[in-house]
Image (cartoon, rainbow, N blue to C red):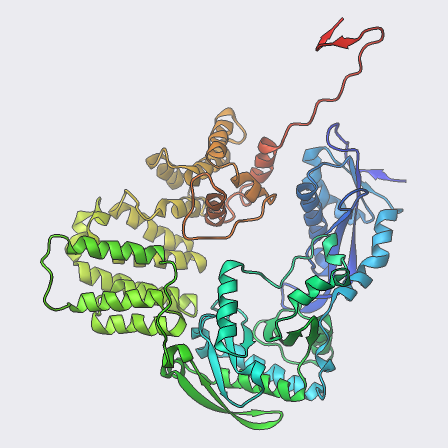
Length: 639
């Protein structure tokens, strides 16, 4: 007998959704870093797109997974069920928080045929989707050799020199010769403690082709496990599979248990192999003509040696352009010779679309030269500016060295420090470089410039200082040092209240997040007509102060009129657009920018997202009325 835990409300659909959870042949990581088997929640219904899956998580997270998959279903299926049935009463409180405001009943039921049907096939189908063979399938690969690779990967993740490389640096392996497909590679990472991804190429032309393709369409292998498309058999479309896996390229990734091959995680867990960094394991794969291959014992030793050579690499080695490292591997001692062709043999510098900052700086240089007679000889500042412009057009390590040369020519080139900060290997290094840029900019413009507070930006010499300070504040935000970032932003607005840099859009959200609402009110009142990036924070401030009131609704309506995409992003109904250098007012890119700037201000304001969902939801359709007996409708009138 079903136990009714809420009264259903008229409106919405007459559907019944069933929600369950299952232990899967996948792995995940608990908050304490312990690796464990993963569970996944799912929501099923009859009709089109019959089920959705949650993200995987540990067993203790099941109630949260259940709530998340139901919230996803509400967004994706764009309907409200009459009831949601669950087999475990312990999940009911989490679901009632999301469903009670919508008038959806939560029922505990033991007999759930839709769930049972999915439970019978889901684990097996998920296991079938693991197309990647396990690490021990490579010829001659043993547990001892895997252990050697694991130790080298851990040593590599503990090192820092290689983090000065970017995915624009093509690295040539001059020795040893491990085959044509392993002669070049690039190393991609996001800085800090993030795990890298090594992609190998047979020649520079293959790298250039992949680089150009990546600029047009960035794709992530970490596909979301969210719906029934995940369970489709790849054999249904062999042409698509051939297109996907016909590159013949080696990839070596350090992956967390959630997305590593389940067989590899089983090996690491069962035999106590060391993890690299904060819970990563090395996975090497060759994708060739529709098939995936794992390395044999010699290839595995090559990757082990490369990890060791990169772990021993210092920033000075990179600057030299060619370096050698003698390392030990399971196959014996090996000498690696690595080089950066882009640094040793630079071709004509590429001419990509200029960065907005590069265009702005060129305009500033032109403005500084207006009315001045041409100099007979270029000044140190001009030579440094030329080098920095070349840095903007160059790639990777060469760009960094050009920016450093600019500082050698003219030590007061503050924008060169900002350039180096944006290419720094971690946030700590970036913060130090921005601080140097601020000090250098202050020295170049002179302390007397601060006496011009109020129209600071109008003095061209102040702009490198302001750019460095804005960069430092952004890094402080990424480091969660919000109060410090606020101090910088507020001082920048005091110096330049016209705010040519858009500082107010970041500052308003930080003040709200810190609970400094009075300061936030003063800020929005100082910029009364400023578009969606301030109107949505204004509406949120109203709600935090007054709750749901006519004035709050008016503020929200005005904000939505300025950008109708923001509610969908905040509520999760829309996917965020890719970030770019520019945004158009009222466009999706502006909404994506606000999503980033707003951080968790809406989610951390009690009731704000529920209120937003309620105020932006489409009203239910009125029930159709039956005509009274003996009367007919004609042309909209009863007679």
